[in-house]
Amino acid sequence: FVMDAARVGKANRGLQNGVQEASAFMKLDKKHLSQASSFLARSKSICILTGAGISAESGIKTFRDAGGLWENHPIEKVATLEGFVEDPRHVWEFYNARRKAADTATPNAAHIALARLELGRLRKTKKAGSSNGNGTGHRKAKPVSILTQNIDGLHQQAGSQNVVELHGSIWKVRCTGCHVVSRDFPVELPLLPRCGDCGSLLRPHVVWFGEHLEADVLETAEFVVQTCDLFLVIGTSAVVQPAASYPFLASRRGIPVIEINKEKTPVSAIATVSLMGLAGMILPKIIPD
Ligand code: OAD
Ligand code: ZN
Image (tube, rainbow, N blue to C red):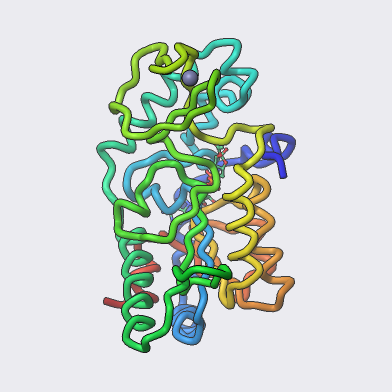
C-alpha cells in the first residue's frame, strides 16, 4: 500500500464555518452516546483509528480543516521525497515548526480518555489472570489498540501503551544514506541535520505521499483491523490510504463502527453510530472515570 496522493486535492475542502459546527453539536443526542457506551462495554478487543482531529484540542493544526497545514504548505513541497530532494532546508523548516508545536502541546481530554480505557482493560485482564496479549508465540489481539496517523506522540504522552504509528513519528529521524532510525533529537534540528555515522542528510522518520508504510507497521495494523470486535474512528477525514480503508474493512467484517468527528466524512455512511462533535467532549462521556 502506498500513500495515496491522488485523493489529496479532492480532500482539500476544509470546514466551512462555525454554523456547521453548531448544528453538528445538536445531533449529538443521548441515544447515540448510550449506544456507543454499550458497544464499548461489550467489546473485548477495540481498534481505534485516530487522525489529526484528536490533537486539535491540544492546539495542533489539522491538515484539511480551514487554516489547516495543507492550506499554506503545498503537499508536493513538504510531504514528498521529491520535495525533500529539491529543497531539504524548506522541508526541515516545516518539520522543525511542527516539532516545536508538538513539544509544547499536552494531551487533551480525548487522548486521556483513550489511555484510561486501555489501562482499565489491562487491569481487568490481569485480575482475571489471563494474558493481555503480550505473551510469546502467536500474536494475540489486545484489548485496546490505537492506530494513529498522527506523528505528535500525544497518545503515548497521555499513557497509551499499545500505539501503532502508521505515519511514523516527528520525534524520529532517518539517515538518507545508511537508513538508521534514531530518536530523542532536540526540538529544533540544525538546518541541515546530518548523520553522525556516515554524514548523509537526515530526514524526518515520517511517511510521505507516494511512500510505503513500514512493513511491520502495516502488518500489525492489518492484524488489528482483522481481529478486533469494535472499531472506533476519531478525528480523521478518512481520505488518505491505507488508513482510510480500515473502517470499511472492519465494517465488512460485520463489526460495529463508531465514528467521532466534528463533521461528516466518507466513514459516516457506514458507521453504526456517528457522534458529531469534539473528540475531547465526547470521549470522556463514553469512557467514564
Ligand atoms: P485531516 O486534517 O484530513 O482531518 C482532520 C479531521 O478531524 C476532519 O475530519 C475534522 O472534521 C476532524 N476534527 C477536527 N477537529 C476535531 C475535534 N476537535 N474533534 C473531532 N474531530 C475533529 O487529518 P487526518 O485525517 O489525520 O499524513 O489526515 C490524514 C493524513 O493526511 C495525515 O496523517 C497526514 C495528512 O496528509 C501525512 O502527512 C503523511
Ligand atoms: Zn547515516
